[in-house]
Length: 113
Length: 115
Image (cartoon, rainbow over all chains, first blue to last red):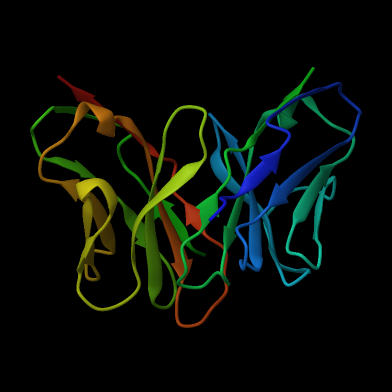
């Protein structure tokens, strides 16, 4: 069974640009969550999508957005990039949240210069 | 509001000795509790979870965790540490009882096992 796949693995962007990250969940998983990981703040929840609907949202500005497609694949977009957006972005999929464990991708390392 | 605390930034253990990584939580309702491990430049790997039932939960790689409702704790343990256990460990909580709340993670504890 293939795991969670995130693309690209590494990105370098300039301030003010926008970026789109992609996540392909494990087959059959309908819940996809996104996290931002930084040394100072740890793992911070961005949002969760379930069956193409945003089910939960963290405390991030509107520059951070996402969507989920009918095949459960998800994308997150960050517009008007800031230096502080440099982080490891992790995607996690699970069957339906709740008591089911989440499986994480290897992450996308975003560097904003 | 849900929260998870991992009071130790780092835990140092000698190989062969028992290890404990501490976690306390605060939620309304019944908690769903999880432990994950992260190796350098990798995503998180699931270790074990507590949903209901027996307070002692066994997971991957010989790890186990004990749920203590009165102390609101879910400490991760292993009877005999290996050098390869050195990694970053995260405790996480999601409100149970059918809720679909998101996973909240602790700050992480770096485990260092010396030969």
